[in-house]
Length: 58
Image 1 (spheres, rainbow, N blue to C red):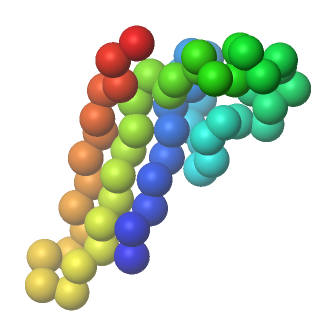
Image 2: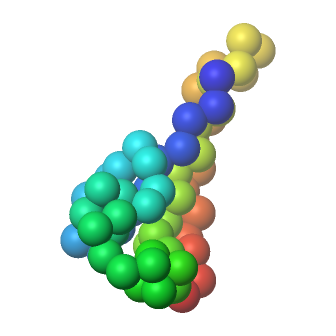
């Protein structure tokens, strides 16, 4: 299993990007928006659950 979560500027995690709030913005705003961080969770039989948080440069 591979799962992603995205941290927005209000410090809230979301399972999708762009967030529903961001989708209400103009297309120009949506194109420039980036999450603050991405959490990647990988579930493996041999190693269990591996989670990493990756900061996104803005």
